[in-house]
Structure formats: structure tokens, C-alpha cells
Image 1 (cartoon, rainbow, N blue to C red):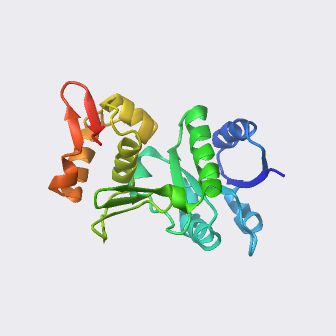
Image 2: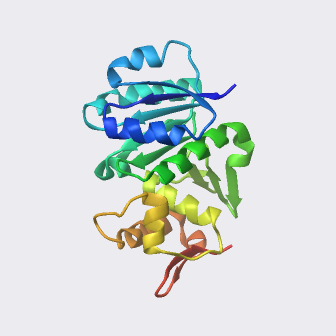
Length: 222
């Protein structure tokens, strides 16, 4: 039996795109608009993935969607506008991710595949330990010496991407593509800003591992 995905969106472009994306997965899909949230997320239901278009008026229902994901442990994928991505909050009790509105079908498929696989792999495989830093990929939490590090989502996403590809150098444009998922309108220097913030929050010892490769970009050094 295929996994069960709930897709909630008000825009036809995202509905059409994800219809094509999800056709490549062995899944059963319940789809509808935000007017049908109550029916789609019925009392006591549990899902393999909830996809929610958190844009426009639908932002008013985001809290209820996150609570449902948290309560049931259902993975959550949000579709957000680019200028809102950095302010997104995610449930602590379920794997979560986002794509920006207008992301390519390949990017959307990669995020869906990751969240579906997260649930199968289990929590134990979702923890990365480096020195005294622990990154929990399932809950999007980072601790250093048992103290939680207050990272924004994009800071977390950039750090975890570089750590998971340690030893590989990525250009700023490549990081924008992999982490932001779109051509950021503010320019590639936004990567530098996020790197500086990450370094300051990690502390001097761990910050040394996030290296600048002159004329190229950044890498996490193992």
C-alpha cells in the first residue's frame, strides 16, 4: 500500500506542479483547498506527509497545520513566498522542510523524497555529532555543549547542508540553489551574511570548521 499524503493549496499552479511531482511516488493523495482543511486533516488522522501552501490568506491557518503535524508526528512540507522563508517556524515533533513558491519540480521532488525517507529511517539516523555539537535533522535543533543554538531556519539549513557534505567546497551560487532553492533576489552575498551569523553562534572552535575558500565559496572541514 502506498503512503498517504495530504496536499492543501489554493493556487492552481502549485496544485498542477505537485500533481506532476507526486505522480512519480507510490502514494495515495488527498488534495483540496484551505476551505477543506478540517475534512482533509480529520480528527485523529496520521499522515506520511502533509504539504501545505503557506501563502496569502492561508498563513492564518499555518498554526493549526503545524499543531496537527506536531500532534500526530506527520512530516510537514511548506510552500512559502521567498520573502517569508526566513521567518518560518516548524513543529518540534515532526520532520519539516519548505520550498519557495516557484521552486522547480526537481527541487520539490527532492524535498518530498527526503521527508518520506526521514520517517522510514527513524530518529536514530537523523543525528549528526561533531565534537560537542549535535545536529538533529528530524527536529531541526542544534546544540553545542548541551546548550541549544538559536538559529533561523536558513542558518540551520545552510549549516546542516555543509555539514552533510563536509570536505566539499560550494560556491555561493551553488549554496543558494541547494539551500534557498531559488535565485535569491538580494544577491549571492546573502550567503556571506548567514555564514558570519552561524560562526558567531557556534563559537570560535566550531566556527573554524566553516572555512572560506578564497575566490570560490565555503566548505565544512572535517
